[in-house]
Amino acid sequence: MKGLVCISTAATPVIIATMPTISRFFGIVIVMFFDDHGFPHFHARHAEGEAKVRIDSLEVMDSNLGRRQLRFVLAWAELHQEELEENWRRARSGETLMEIEPLQ
Image (cartoon, rainbow, N blue to C red; front, side):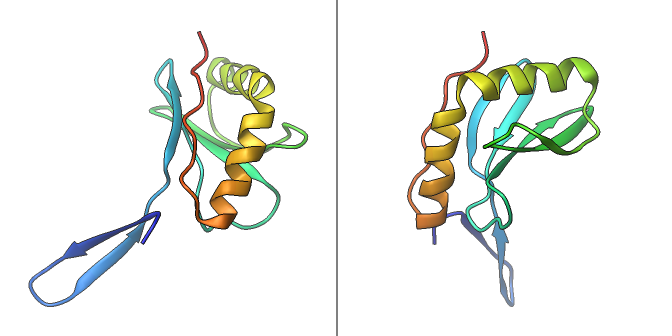
């Protein structure tokens, strides 16, 4: 099962959806759900918060990230928008997602 982890307990296995990590930079982890819905988007996570960003317009859909981390995320997304679109297509098809170069 792609995108899922099965944890076996004594009685019943528990299936937990995972989000493949597609990039990491400056303490920020970029992930994408296999079974996410709505507009094509990705999630950015950091110790201080997280954000959800549309891929086509780079609109911030939801965020409690600090301003500095959000600027890093948006700069990275602008550089890698085509790769993000391809990963969204792959995720919808259940294919393996590509790693994307981090922000340098």
